[in-house]
Length: 484
Ligand SMILES: [Cu+2]
Image: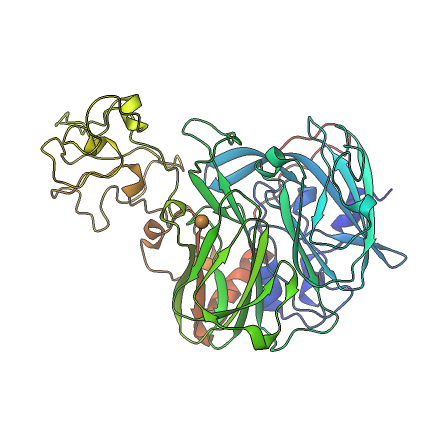
């Protein structure tokens, strides 16, 4: 069996010298691993230079899965295990994923490849891996009982098959509740010959929904009401922006195997849907859009020319998916010095009305948004939901520091929480002060930068890559217990 250490051989240096990969692209492509320092075995940069000279896909905030070659077979190692997922700085979820990350690491292979996946189950319950959309032999399909025995805790299974398709696929546990705990990842198969027209940037985003109520860290997988929504495991504004040079052509691959559909909207530029979970769409069938509905178990690939400079939002347009830590107004929320409440009791706050009219003056303000029309509504200061624990977040309750003025009382989701410093990274350099206040849930930005600004930020990205944070202590060897 291949040792884990052998997977550490690929380095950033290897990436930089890769065939057909410009250094700057490789730099941004380098993984930002949630909860994993450079010394973490799962955080090792992936080898994306062997095989073909394809433009690598960047699944920002999610690492690429490295592989070893064994007689022409690409050998991957995939471990199902509990994961600490940092959805926002300091906000940790306890979830299940693969190789220390949620979503799981990205497979990136080429049409015609033969791959072998050495899979190990370190979960406390049985699991298997299903290769969604891949045409594989039935014994490789990863459905427990039907195509293979369910793999008990500690069990191992080897998946091996040849890839004759190309496109945007995914892999996931075939247990529904395991999927909702995070067990999925992207599976990109490049075509033998690059698609036309060529693109300059190729990104991948995994959509996920979570029901994690306040004071909890574990998703409620039975809930159909989600209060956290993520791109590649990050809620806005923590998702790393996509960096594009003005004039470049961009591809973004979006996959969804959660509970909800997500209308993903791009600001500023029109795009065409150029692929689905089944593969490439012929160009004759493309048409312009700026919102693409990514349904459950679907992939949608969009392409556009980055014609206009600016920090353009890319986000799910469902209003409830543009928020963080969404909760009903529960319990009175008193403003210091006033003692006037906005929220109702537990039952009213959860929307359970036994007497009266929900729109009455007494009850209306308890259901989320007050409208400033009822006598009972007064200004409140909503200071719940602070995530980072750093003690300050700029303004609370007002976009322009207008907290002292009379305002329509809000509820936690109205909070304007600036956290520029907490999420600052080279990719966010130069964004408008306070930008993070406008970002929650399934939101990120496509930064279309004039060449000089682009080069400047890419230089910062490369410098950060060259001077990574100090590695954490090396983890215990495989098999000696594994903690995250
Ligand atoms: Cu959505």
